[in-house]
Image (cartoon, rainbow, N blue to C red; front, side, top):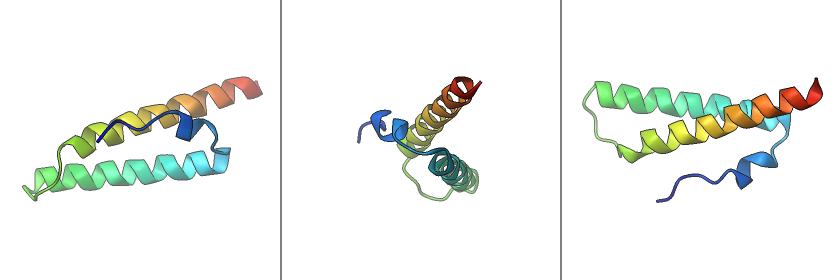
Length: 68
């Protein structure tokens, strides 16, 4: 499984972007909880979620700078 592509993120509206950020943060929380309680999970999902979150935050920041 490859890392998420930024092309998918660039076309999102501000509202969709905020919703996606919230969803990825929830997913990361659930993955960390699974890791902490020794439940089975695919460890690469943490890396992919963190990568996706960084993409989303970068796009959000660039959108805010464009508005100023």
